[in-house]
Length: 504
Image (cartoon, rainbow, N blue to C red; front, side, top):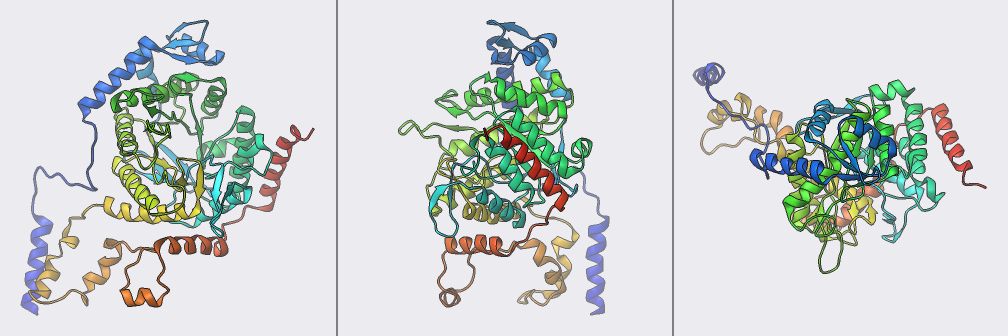
């Protein structure tokens, strides 16, 4: 034993003190769609469209800001042509990293480099009831439940509502969503609003929870989502919100939704140009208003099904590919990135959902997109499902384990324990195994690994049944951290003030 121990130490000494030149270590799985040359060529195409074709901006203040920054204004003050140097100046002042905090001011989402964070999406008008399986209109209680499920799941990094509430004042569905989510999750929230007035109410709600405007700015637990009208139209409502968030210096996404063959060319590269033109226009407007305003760029990019005119989500390979390419292009510019995954064109939670969630989540993680939304979307973004969220959470966990790649160091090479066990032995009783298996081996929650006899004994449960049971268990047992009563009272008061306008 003494001689063996001596040999083991010799191995360790050799590994510790050897010199390795010109090393290249992969810290994670490597993946790329576009080369640097392709990114440069597409970006030059974006600059040509912005400078030569221009965009339509239906907002007088934004147009005037752009004129003063050196842009050319035509067509009765609507068409704006943005020179390349203005675009590059805006990119240079935009932060290359944005950090979101949870409700307790713990910094949890570092949107920098290839860090990826996942969450649900917004604005579904329908919901699949986790108890009855019924597809029905969304209620405010569904948003309470979504926030609770997101709060409990380890791979859901932030919350979106998965819904557009139908059992409240219609014009205030966005405000009611924030009212529900803030009370049921500590995690960061991605919000949206119908208009500027509702956005102001929403920001007041976040400020009430944070302890004031400055505290929210220092540790934001909100990132705000809004959209232009693709292709290349920026409405007054969209730009109102864009300018307000820039002035507040709070994180925001300005995200086009391009459909190749409809609102974009029927080519992947052409669609990427339209997407980047629209998202960078928002970046430029935000930066000329408030240099350094935190902005995330990206898009919801897909193609139109030419047989049905449907907007394709997970069933489209172009969906996954173009999102990955768009992320690489935005990262090439040094800006935090936004993407989409975990969503399906299926109408119910079935095998199609699991296929599409898995492929899109894997693709988004490989791309290294910083903030990825729409986990739990069904029916091409028309229906939300908590079962879809639970399924997505498990897939994300599995994908994250793959993305960690292979650790290569003295401990992981395991030369000493290999020598100790020797040919014909086993590693089950080794301390090295006990020390490493938990961090090296991913463990499923709902997926089945038991033998056939045990599966029969336990009720022959399908994966869908297990996912449903997990969603129900969270709803019935998870208790999110409650807000203080005085903060809840402030939120209630802000909602009540917003309601007054519509109670006449």
